[in-house]
Length: 244
Image 1 (cartoon, rainbow, N blue to C red):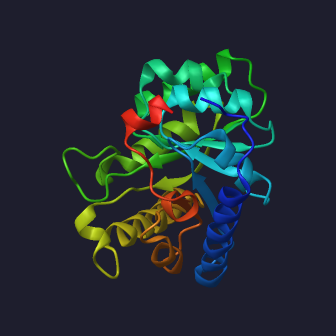
Image 2: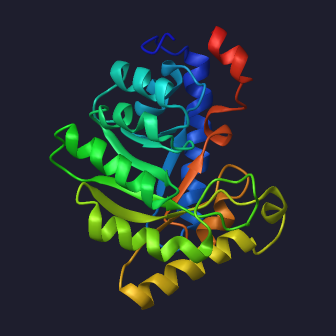
């Protein structure tokens, strides 16, 4: 992967136009000050450099190896978000990334403990921001904590994971739900946030909304949106990306 290649003038201009359009949409739609996470999965480092040169600092990656390679080659003040499915055997690799800002896919108390142990054992002085991923749609093949189990996972992080800072809740939601207004997955995450604030007194962020529905998510109270194709264009197939 040519992570440090200079983007072409045409490509830089394309990303600049896209990023400005998305940033304007965020400003227009947000109910509260919100974070734009530019999802750079399969994209070359030159694309990230182009967005970085425009002031973008939060970037999201789905694969641990790809994230490690990009983090080593790109500016140290990038704030990386891991947004792929978390595997216990990859926690140590994630903990070794100096500028890892958040893991957004904690989907069990066991994974929280594993990530916490890896972070502490790596000698990290500051806490790692984490989001609890919630399976708001109840789909069997979807990652995330079942809604009925969210409070116990939250309590585990707060009570037993000193290396972690519970930042918020995250959902991907269903394809079916994304076609509805209001989106039932977003409403479910908002309701869970409100329930947790009432029951245990925590104020949590909401990471929800992607390229096709981030404006709607912001209008419902999202504080962080994960936008890829609207910033960088359509992603290549995984096998093609690995060849480039």
